[in-house]
Every structure is written in C-alpha cells, then in structure tokens.
Length: 262
Image (cartoon, rainbow, N blue to C red; front, side):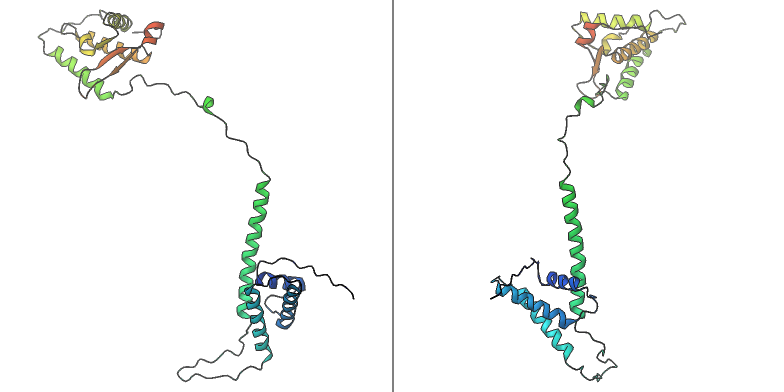
C-alpha cells in the first residue's frame, strides 16, 4: 500500500487559511469561486483529522459558513418582494459572499501590518546600543554667583540707608578730590575683616563721620570684592543689615586690583 505524506502549514485561524488558499490559487478575492475554495478548505480539515490534529471550533464554524454560502450560491434566487409600506425591494444583486470577502480584506490588511511590525522588530533586534556613559566631565562649569541670595533691591536699600544717615547731618558740601581710591578702600575693607574675625556688618563700614564720597567708594569696593570672590554678602532676615563675610580661600590667596582703574 502506497504511503501518503501530508505536510500542513500552521495557520493562526480560519481566515488565515482561506487567505492562503486564495493566494495559492491566485484567485481574485472580490470574486471567490466559493465551490473551489470550500472543497480545498474541507480537504485541509480532513487532512488535519487524518493526522489526528486537533481541529478547533473556529475552523469548524468557518466550514459551516462556507457550506452555507455554497448552498446559497447553488439555490435559485428568490423572487423580488415589494414591501407594503414603501418602495424598498430586495436587492437582486445580493451576494452571499460579500460579508466573508469584507472579513478577508480586513484580515489581510491587519496581517500585512503585523508582518511589517515583525520585520521592524527583527531589524531592530540586530542593532546593539552602548551603555550610557557619565558625561559629567563634559558639563560646563557654572560660575558661582558672588551675590547669591541677595537681590539688587537689598543693595540699593543698604546704600539708601547709608546715604540717609549721612544727609541727616548738617554738613557743608565741598568739592574736593577723592581722599581714597576704590583700590585702597578694598584693601582697607579686607584689613578690617581680618581684624574683626572675618565678618562685619555693612553699617560698621560706613560710620556717621564718613562723607558721601567715602560711602560711594566703600560701596564700589564691596562690589569689586564680591566680584573677585574675596567676600560674600547675605542677610539673616529681610530688611536686616547686610553681613559681609570674608572667604577663607579669597583671603588666603589674596586678590589683584590691576584691572581696577579708579
């Protein structure tokens, strides 16, 4: 007795099997020869049963659907029935395959998308990425703000208070040369901080005997010292006197006044 060998492909469902049969036979999906497709489908189910493979219920449901469509295609078309209340009449061109064709077209579209995504997944799996590196050494250094924590309004108020204290004195304004430069006043402030233990209040630097020019020079000297990071300024509470504190590294390494020309 001659031995027959079956080689069956694995399909994800009855629609997948039908598409395979249609593509294999090069059939127009919009004009399916239902008898031919039904016979091929039933042959496939018979082969599965002969190989004792489990035939799921959805394959059996599709077989019943194909047989139902096949029987409708073989039966003569019913006569046209005119409705009593309107002019609607049954469509003489009704095709029992239409619903199945629509399902097959929709399934083919989603299957093509799934195949495309599967190809993309395979393509992406061939790409290997490096582990992330520490890029901290390449981050640009941020220069510390010498007046961090102080608003420009705080400095303006401190300057205004010093000027108000000076204006309350009965003094005759005189025009004369500056008695001290900003460079010299910077050195005096640093010396004063060293004697005071590295911390002093702004009001202590501008006493009642200081002239308008001296207050302005002191104010400019403090701004320059903050700029070269020799001192820092801060307040404990809003509107309190500004505290001037020497930086240890600034005092230790000294500072240059070469760029200051006034």
